Image 1: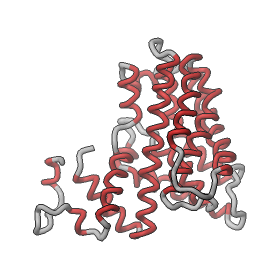
Image 2: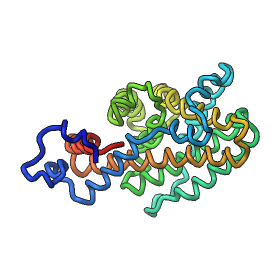
Image 3: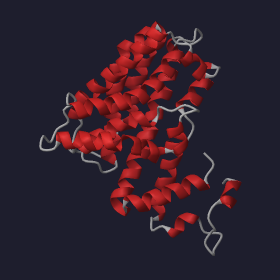
Image 4: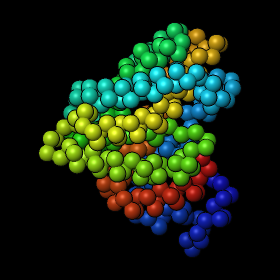
Length: 286
């Protein structure tokens, strides 16, 4: 545990008890929240890619030709639209165990193609891998008690793609998970208002398109980083699979953290969970 604890608010009288004891979360839920904080506030995808590529990946991303970056940006939003249209409509409504391993294997397979064929293959495999990943995210949401027939849940699933799109200079990441949620809150509210009475997600509505554009701008950062890593000459098909494995695992971890927080909010209330979240974030070294 970090020595930075000494800078926080005074501890309870029993210094041996964690600050979390002030908030009425069960021991099991406190541990679930701790794991969620580690996932949502932990090392970025950039750090994992840098280790794979053997060099700072942010520099690689900046070196992508502008036409390639533009194509990736357009492909990212198109992939999100396609994924939202198809991925959530084929999830069984029963069962509690998310098939994250199967989804990860399928996405890694598509990534191996990207590694073998180069950056241009990203434009081909991105809609496939994004749809597979959104299905995995939906399974995780369902396992945390979400109703996949609720349009708000569908939007919460696709928002996971915005949680991973940060870099070292990203103020939203510095502010944390709740800052990213707050940045999207107005767009989500407008999308839900436009969907009211329909009972389904219509990705063609103007509000949904604006939300997808907002999410896509952040998701596109991660996709560009992945494309840059796959462009490294030493990364062949095996390297592409490793890059995609890290890519899928990153978003599955974010999804688990995100929907754990939402489950706890339904149980304890948003204010209580946010206070507990902030305590955990302050008291552990990420």
